[in-house]
Image (tube, rainbow, N blue to C red; front, side, top):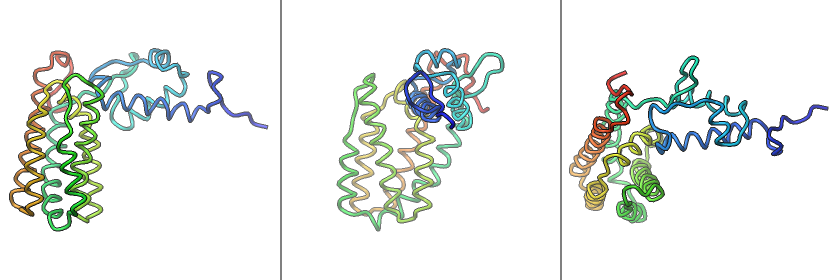
Length: 236
């Protein structure tokens, strides 16, 4: 009879440990606790997380597949750098998709959705407080995704969701190194007012302006952060 593959005497399967390691490392990367360009080794990660090397190796392979980690031959791994090309491509696509979702949402937003958008627009954080920043960033994702869902175009909403997920690390990096909490709150409030007024032209313009301001925040953070001097931030 085959015995389950258990590690560290925990009674958990290697697949379970791989999933656990993957989830922890992915969160650390998206939240920039593991910064762009940071080096990793299987041994160091295994010791820190107290998880065996085999599930750590599999977790890192999955993160390589996701594009969040790169293999460095004979030296382990490194967290994939954030490049200006990444920023331009992601925000360029968001500038096409999200203003369109705003216009479509105008006719369909319900009062409960508008109330929720107003609540989300008021979420703030103290720079340097990681917990508050994560609450703020999740509220930011929900704010944009709520509008996309109201478009009643499921494919468009799913595309916005995907782009928000891919943007998460960039925005985490931006607000960590170049916070603009009051500007973001003001822009969200203004967009809420235009949505409440069912003013499609103004809402579309505000959405575009907000995305461009967020893009510039990320670019400014890349250009001034001294820890990235050895990390390529030009087009890859």
